[in-house]
Image (cartoon, rainbow, N blue to C red; front, side):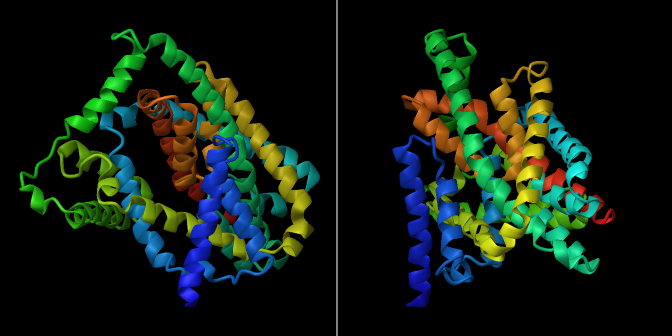
Length: 396
């Protein structure tokens, strides 16, 4: 009974988030509303372990993350992945802008250890936050132990709606371009829409099995094999390349070879289940702090977040035009450092679905925006933030 009740509450929070997003046409993103509901719940009546009780524990999340990243790889080809170097450059430059503003300007307002403890979570996800928390405990700096996780929680809450607004502006800009060029068969718009539909119809496969053998479990097993290979290679490299990044790359390669089809987990009817579980686990991190703890350090958090976002904005704006991106798209790529996967995927697909007027327009928006957001998120959260946290641990 307790487990079923926990599961129902978790699903209800996710449902309310989706309904609000749909009602506001993604102006208020679903993950922002769901995060607020979880925060209020944890700070009032919800038990801290409600998400694990709903079956979404760390083991489930490890499986879900790897499988979903392989799935993301099926949405891109190798050429497209390599073409996203511009998004990587802008995202990393945005992180550099954050480091510059927070370390230089932030040091005028707060002591050095406070700034060092707060910056890595500001440039990445929960991994960076937990690394800094453990480092502070080991160094005996107990007064700052709550700062990294609190920073992670607060900057995500700010990052979700801000990124949604930017993506909506980019989406509207692209829809205007779509309307002007959609009837020209030689235009970039027509080619991208055609490419999207061709990838769905002309799927390469190395398996020539009868339909009765092409079952969901056959799809899941193949995706799991690629995810297992990605994690194994990541372990062999001792983390030199993040295992999540390897899973994405191996997903692209497996798709190109015909080992995995487009949107494999969608076809196996498990994509949403895995995505919801992963989201629930991320929101469960809101239980690690309280209003009292945040209240004591709210000034440091707000000032450093504003400085960090200002640094991202200036840095991404400088590089946007030379690299052929709009300021909105460049800034959104930089902001992926505030949340990473799966939030970047959910925010992008929500906005594309609500801004587009038909399926072809939505396909064009997704082809134009999603690869940049995914690659930007991996460059910042999965790679840069972990490196930054490792370096900053030595500065405490």
